[in-house]
Image (cartoon, rainbow, N blue to C red; front, side, top):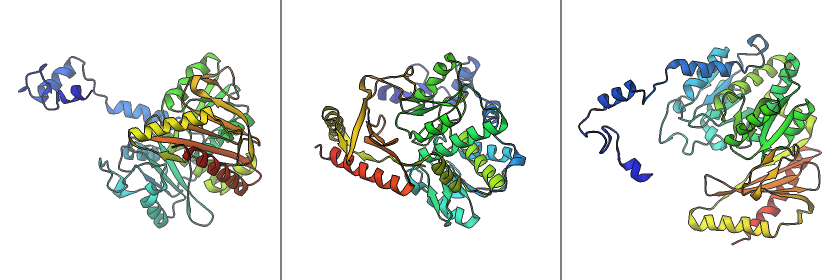
Length: 410
């Protein structure tokens, strides 16, 4: 690949295939005339944005469109499409972090532009305090991932993980469709195998099936043909790493559509109930159970780090614990040779290097898998208890026991 890249002269074309003194203009015009390059017009952007707008659950007269919101594209590509959709929907009090509005390949204002990291919201929080914002939203550099912070009752901002934002979206979509009489009898949603099971309980309470897939949207959206064969209608798909796919026509995670729906949800709950998204999230915990979510990881760089991650997976696979933090392991799924959906066995899950341990107690489990793109081994801890405080406590106990076990592997 490097040889091919180095063979390209970006101003004169392919070395050896085109004279080095040929102008870029000539080469470009020739390629366009031969349909080797097709330039997409603004009409394609408009078609995409109009499809996103069509996902609206409630109309403008049902929303408080003056709700104060702060958005940041983190010096990436999200500014124009996001702000265009918000204007089109009629939102009147959306502030953008000016220092992070335009693309910057060095991301000098934020360092590591990952919206999952609360540090990426530093400037958004500052602007939010000035404008009285109820909701802070961020997209990553290519605007496919999306994260939020919400205003708590004490006036501080709470960063939500991808599971929690997923709860809000799942609840808003299903409740809105039910109220509008558009909730299909054959509706289906998809989450990854390492995403909280709370959303499955939510979906099932509306008669909607929640399927599981491997991580990544080639897998989440890859289930759409499977659902179509079963005459089921795809409504939403997501994973805990702040990725959301809100319609079958955009078959990838998409921060612009997720952002529009979260803003709409905030505006709807504010208009109809006088509630913030923080209060809505607390209501969801009260209704479906007090869940806790935790997704730590270990970064182990280089060849030695990769080898150690391999040893960690080999060790826990060869010597799986029978008990964790005083709780028995009641089921283990090793996906190395594939597995099945825990709720829908007809949905066969392909093989991957991941382990999932289910412990005694309701919806209490954890999963371990190496990252496919970074030098990390990733962990996912979930539990459901009688209070949010108890859930966080139990999750912390399980996390400590598992991390102690895995970090002991040299």
